[in-house]
Length: 202
Picture 1 (cartoon, rainbow, N blue to C red):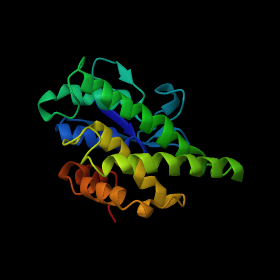
Picture 2 (cartoon, rainbow, N blue to C red):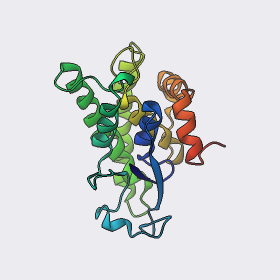
Picture 3 (cartoon, rainbow, N blue to C red):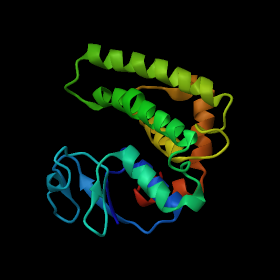
Picture 4 (tube, one colour):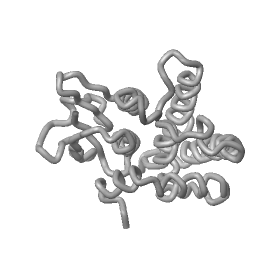
């Protein structure tokens, strides 16, 4: 399998999941500006939308959305318990969190990284993020992880998005529980391995 990624982007979550699951995976770095890979491939031929992650399989199949990719990887290593079994109520709770992170947190960060976004749009995004992080912090104040007692792929995804705040003036220190949660996940060996492989360790 190949995972196409850009350092620190949302593709870091499937990278973390692959490390947690101890799955052999080939990393291919993508320049999101030029839309070319480090091997000189035209990335738009793999994903016409032009964003990471992309997971290509040995049989030629591919997935291009992070929440789908991390569930797929988790299901390849069920013994690691990174996702509840398909068909269980807990699996739908996982999908509930993945949808929330994707649509309410991840996408709210997008205009903050865009130089072309009007200030009013950025302020609306910050207001939305503040509200969504508030409810997330309230939940995590009484649960160690998003699915309760155990780390899951949803935690990998939320962890990555929380790291973006430092670049766009979204200060998560106002929620000590989120800081503690992120610090706890940072210390996981698989997370350390993934961020090291992406050159993100200072």
